Image 1 (cartoon, rainbow, N blue to C red):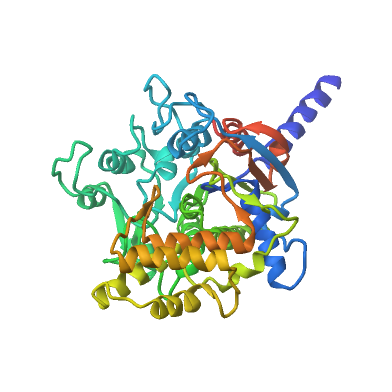
Image 2 (tube, rainbow, N blue to C red):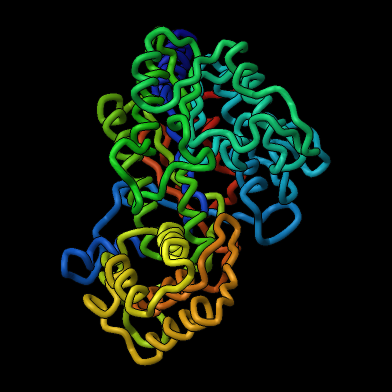
Length: 466
């Protein structure tokens, strides 16, 4: 009798553990998204409503919260590939490595474990499919800049769904030699390539495996910034929705889906606060899509949100005990697009641009003078750069990791940060903590302080991946 009771207890406990396993796993990574990027976005939203405080983002409201360290094997400040590898494999590696340890041995990723466990797998991003973070989930290369070789690893992983802006080097190897296009190679491996959402919807039903990228002619490096979004542009929320529909069609044994908000990092490299906050909101919109799925499958779904590192050393408050984040709503486009507008004006006028024309452009796109009064010092910063760039024809473009910026646009961005009282310590990554949020099956595993290598291990435990 006693033995029978033990057997029944074992069966019940086994069933309980099985029931708690996450059949559906969402893994969101906000590239460059430190604690202040999240907090700043919530205060930015509150100030738009005319109050001091926060307007909570959905993911920052999840019941489980923690924070993670991000150092790599070679430096306290990580790059995206080492951090992406830590978040995908649970192992530290050198800056620059993709899915390999510091001895260049191949590491198994949590996505590969999910596939081995019978789950469908998706890897998606708002930047290029061969960029560091998404690559770290499916590729194994010694250098993140080996874009062609990384793309060749995509069909080898045999995942079910990939999506992003496009591919950076579809016909050029790392040693700069011409090579066969990766597109027919991917198609020969059984993938359907859809360019744009309409093409995806037309092809999805018959496709066995899918690669969704932007429409022909769009910039393959990334989706447009959220602040620059136009009708018809592919969004991270649409990618997430498409991934869910594709991964749940046919026999449904569950899925693992990684979604990267990649351009938070890019905007932070450019020290562009309005664009940063809009990118965080954009990722939250993608999380909302996942959360709607979670509400239909609350006992079987796990959503985890984190970041690979902080970028920019974002500070909320400079000199005075004040923040003026509401001023950022007057910025109508990213620094990147403002730079393009200035370049276009320069070309249109044969470099003979008046100060009045520059003022009109900045008033329209940044709200300067009309909505945002400038101090004498701030106007002098802009006027001095105008004189240097257009009168003396000595325009020295500012370069960050992902952009080359008209000097006048760079100064305008600095003035906007000054008005909003947002500070920056760097144009690159920092060693700051990153947040961790979770909701759903086994979400309690993500409480408290942890290292980034713990996150994929805990996801594998939550999903029952071996």
